[in-house]
Image (cartoon, rainbow, N blue to C red; front, side):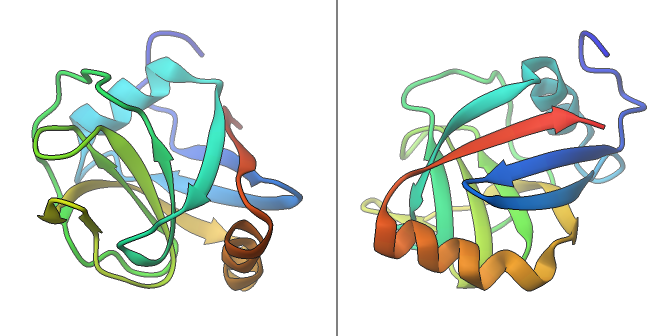
Length: 144
């Protein structure tokens, strides 16, 4: 797969020793999905979300995605991944593992819900607890 194949529906997501399968929200967040698919394989570090509750996040700094809001929310469900395209706070990906209200030191944020975990939901709490207690973990996204 190259250049963000818009037919790519599923991803493997690994956080430390935990493995998940995610479904791209191609109908609800098509621009965000295509942008993200172009970055694959994607690797970074997941750290615990300081202000958002039960979530880990991947800081992307001042990286300009060129995206605006689509399918955005401040209240992701357990297993939802959001991309905040930047603006009031730094660009980031948020991965909710439990009760979450997306926020930063600037206040409440909204991000584009672009991936939903469909396999490995039973591991979410353990993954979040590991990141909280043990610190940053390697996170990777690959096409299936």
